[in-house]
Image (cartoon, rainbow, N blue to C red; front, side, top):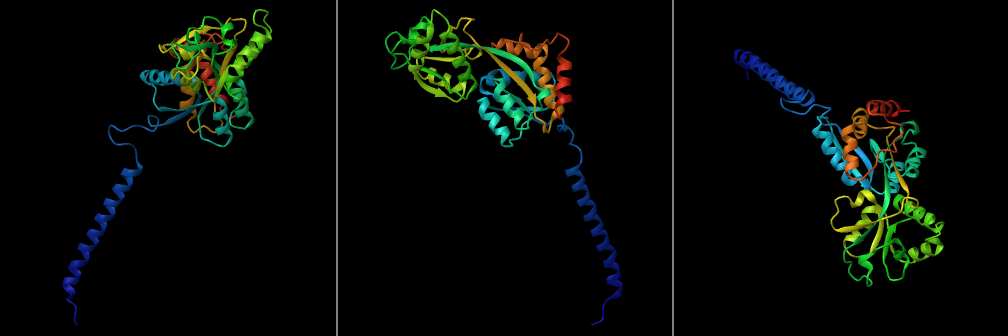
Length: 311
């Protein structure tokens, strides 16, 4: 059959135009997907996510610090993984991704250093804490007089239910140090430690577990951090004498493989700033233990953290 040559010649230019239009449209779509954000969209720095592994006792204060950090105009999102410091150090050792590690003691920070996830020179002490005894107003199933504990000495008497941190947990280690201090004190002596330990009914993996047991009335008293009872209307507090107490040191550092080192360093710097310091102290933490950080040195501290992040 004979082809209509003029008709074929007219169809070819139209086909070429259609192919060209399709190619142009496809190119525009690809550019739209790979190019910068649309009007009103977030920039790359605004969408950066800084992942912070933080001790459970930092839950409230770090969440407030993140809100204050955002209100101060800093870009980027801060996300947290709160758990016992020993658990977080274990996760880092196993390769979990994080940008910052904030521990409730130096031992677990050292564990992260030994695992090759933290550079030793980047570690900074940003806050300290102390121990305190928390107790409920009327624990269920408690022995007579237990809810109205009036002195530390009563904690060693039979009939009281005490909850503490497990030995591998920072709060547990600090508690055992307090008991060792008490055993050397003439007023308390070894008998106090023995009676206290005999009354322990539960050993928790983080301080939040201790607080939960107290709030549920499953224990009469528990050793927690002073910061844990700030603003807590459900529990009462009993002070531990200063000469028996323990200073809980909180170190912080960037991970060596942080994916957001600049944004992470900015958050650490914020914690050392006047505003960040105010948040920490309002939640019951002390900052006087910082290594000679002057009022104008917060920026230098953050720069040093960033400079050593990839040592």
